[in-house]
Amino acid sequence: MGTSTSLAYEENQFEISEAHLKKVSDYQDKRFGNISILKETFPPKRLFLRKIVPYNSDANIRSIQKKIQMRQALGGFYAKIAGNSIEKVDKLCLQELRMEITIHYSKNSLESEIKRRTDLKKGFEVEELMHIFMAMTHFCDAMDLFKSREHMLGPQIVMLYPRGTISVVETQFLRPGLDRYKKMLAISYEPVKPEKWEILAPEELHGLRERKTNIDFSTEKIHVFDIGVTMLCAIGCKPSWWFYDLSKFEF
Image 1 (tube, helix red, strand yellow):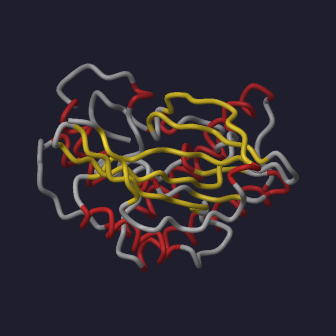
Image 2: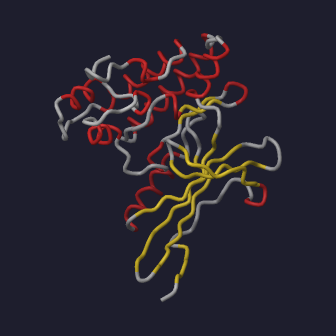
């Protein structure tokens, strides 16, 4: 029995030609998994992040494609999904759906910039902080509109571009099924290095302390809290885990 590959659906038209994209590197990203970085060969020579994401069913694929289409009209604060295509792969009678997602990307995240400025002993200007705050606020407004929650909201997914442009990456398209609370609940009995913990809201920390598996979290409250901690990270040039006492699940 061989391997057959066919397009399951028409792919979204990519805004630039594949011939004008050159692969820069492949690497394992702690946020998004195994990814490729592409770069335009002509100005403005933007960077793109590309990842192949496996899905279980046609229904999952259609749901994700619908969400992507709904987000195309969002403003510059949103890391634009520049293209996606679907392959249906049959291997030894087992079928796998793979979705290749390409988004605008910047290697300079708020997290890396905080580290850089800590070394330089130079903080952010007030105008820079306001741009970061407004981009995150607009992003969370959009998530609320779509009744979605960003499970990795924090300095690691805030992208900083030249000329002060800022966008936020919605990670559900790159890391489907990710739930940071469930991940933390699964490992909270084990010794964990502080930097392994992501930003968790007070009700999430309380839930971890009580070992609760099913909690009706307020998405709005968690987003607001995450914005607040992210801004404190930027103002103080501190990593997000600096605000936690993990031995007591307290701030």
